[in-house]
Image 1 (cartoon, helix red, strand yellow):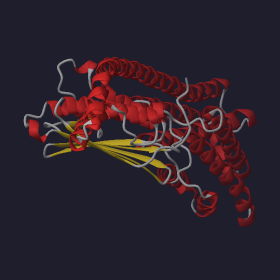
Image 2 (cartoon, one colour):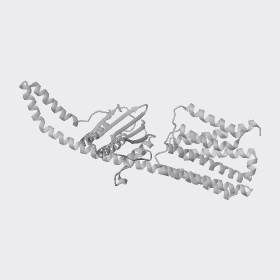
Image 3 (cartoon, helix red, strand yellow):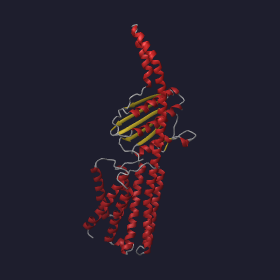
Image 4 (cartoon, helix red, strand yellow):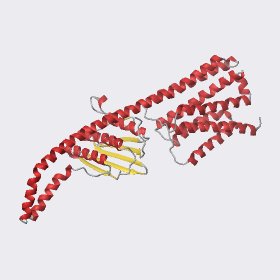
Length: 439
């Protein structure tokens, strides 16, 4: 075939492969950028480069495709680093398996040996186009509905699933090696073996989906338990406030009598001092408006009272969250766990005068940023994010921030923990959106 004919054949094949990448990554990871022109430009670059490379040196096409898959997943799409590596690795394995399956199937259907298929340009490109079409269909099948984002799954599960997929790719290569060594066309056994390996590889993805569902259910149950704990604390606070209100009710007549007498006697200075003292005693029991969201303000007021009851200096800096789109319930879960850990850490600090907590909540550029800083004894950070619990019953502790981490992953957010010189810092970033965890 002529140069022009090769170009005309290969560019549609590269376009099909590029579209399969787009479907796979955009549905699982979500776009990182808002400009569609950026994605069109990158995919146009891939099609042109892939087409030109296949014409001049087809031996480097596979390596080029693998590199592009990982580059695309890292720079164009969302998710954590582990999720992006998992998706890129899974897609490249699927590409390899599908191409080998298409080659075995073509050998069987047309009764050609692999050597004959490789020597025939027309047969080679028919098989190549069939493999890319199958890859595109596979991308639609495994990703399911649009925007079915990857959820939180432990990284070691992803590593195991990816290892199984690459074992399947190795088995596919072994199968096609047997076909090539026979010197004849593929037999039904070879086709069934190749198909079976491909099915197992696809099932790996559905196992991942089940693990994801299980992880999301764990998050939901942890959030429910957190709600119950917060409600119990809130009811206790309400009980204590009711006792205080009853006490004030009994005293109010005496207060009014004293006020009336001082006013009648013209003792205005004493009256002013009396009212100032009374207001200072009553005001701390009232909930302060900090964020503009009543449920969040109530939580922060409760945590402030709890911390100050232990002699911990607690300050909160926050902008308004009145127009926040993110679920206040889930934001309360994040704040509650972070502050509870901060209070526990402060209570372990030997220098009681140095115990403090500072919480910052900022809504900016469609994101919510949370930073909780507190005094703390030495803390070991593991998994790059979570503090290692020092409690004996470790299985029953340290679960709060792990839940927060999974919750943030579900929202494509992130968290980070740092410790230095007696100071522990919890940092979280959340996309301010209305998405919620599937129930």
